[in-house]
Image (tube, rainbow, N blue to C red; front, side, top):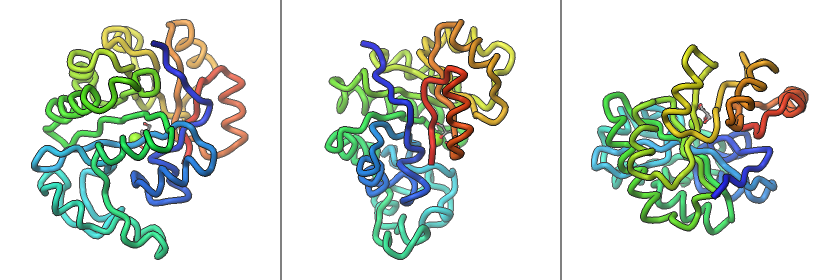
Length: 235
Ligand code: G3P
Ligand code: MG
């Protein structure tokens, strides 16, 4: 199956409008017209995949310490909305399964970024792969799994081969093309800041789609799309 992309992908749900990596964020992304969202997946201490960006709790919730050192039950009691605005108080950190169910119900396609805590890359990717195989076998053309960690993409390739993979990076470092090929990626996801028209052309010539993050300026988005970028990931 081929990836059914849209030009615009909501970053961490729709991070400018709603608390990031939350179900309300997904609902508001869908209401705003997004058909794709990106979100981050990290493992709790009891190996439940949770939607969370930072290794440490506290910026986007009222927790403390590292997410990977607390069980899902405790994480689910945290408030993940009040930090953003009082109206969002009571929002919870969703599990990956909650996120999938919500996106499925809303008709949202998913860029699943595997975001392991230090030392947990392989196990995080294994659990993400198992979860996708179990919950999403019918959604393979509407999901792309990405990660900055090469190990995570290796595990995804081995354990969830039916799902598309994206090579996530800051910029195109030496060897990017070989690495993306070896990992069987369909797309390359560079930061838009150092991205050039020549780099976008090189990605396309190598046979990959380009998804670039995090593009919040409409003029910059138009330039990137004119260069041939396939999708911009935006707050
Ligand atoms: O997947 C694109 C983007 O989310 C990568 O950076 O730090 O926002 O997860 P970050
Ligand atoms: Mg991300």
